[in-house]
Amino acid sequence: MSTIAKIFVLIFCVFSPLLANAGRLEDYPTVEKTWGNVLNPSNSIPDKDFQVYYINTNHPKKVIATEKAKNIVVDYAYNELYNINAEHFGAYWIGKVVINQDGLYQLNVKQSRAKSRIFIDKHIVFSSDDDGSDVIHLKKGTYTLEVEHINNWHTANVIVTLHPLVKVINKLDLQQEIAKLNLPQESVVHVVSISDSDSTKNNVFVQVDDTQKPYIIFLNSSDGVTWDIKDNKPALIIYNNANEGSIVKADEDIPIMAWDGDISYRIADRGDLECSCDE
Image (cartoon, rainbow, N blue to C red; front, side, top):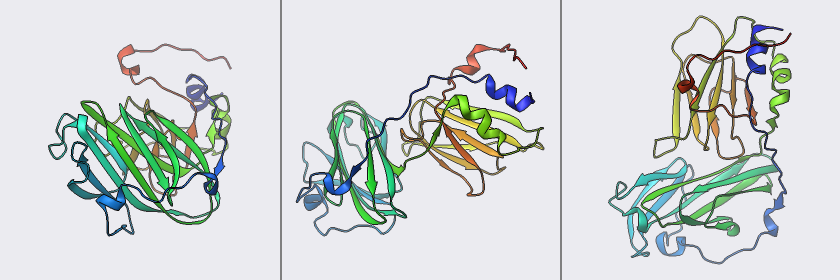
């Protein structure tokens, strides 16, 4: 067994299969009005990214601030964002989503003590005060995505993602899938394992110091994050939580695999690990 294969056999995780029942967008109920009728009466929709409107829920018709945002995400405490007390924080996002081909798309919502409603072309695809996910069948085209959010805690944490449903590799099949790539035998493995992102935009930037050997990198998080790979391209990227909100931004020519594994972000606290592997 190769050195690379041995390394992968040593990585274990809890298996949690994705059970998805996809619904057609036209089957979801519709509404005539959203917060946009009050906060964005001109119905201005950016061609790229999202426009977000921040409010204090004690004065819900008054826009405190508005700005462009690449992602639908907020992460702050107390009054760190535009001096809005997090317990009275509200926000409304609107933007266009381009679907390049017919298929299944995963909607994920992660939020603290809060409630969100999400609309795609005025169809209510999510309404809850808890985390949630759904698989929606969307046809090729351009859609308007709107998010209404009300927070009710001293910290405000919400992230909403919509992306193509990703095929997640079972941990037991990972070694076989990697072998198909015929990576160099001298390849080394790096692991980045975190709980979540400290960034208000939920980004995690990863830059590996210059190395002479090709390398494989595992990107592991407890919560969904946006991984941004900088410079010194890896030979392979493997990440988890693909259908729970995690996204990888990297050059298109880098192979990327999603798996159902988990590597504890406390692994560095365990000291030197000893292990063996049967041939």
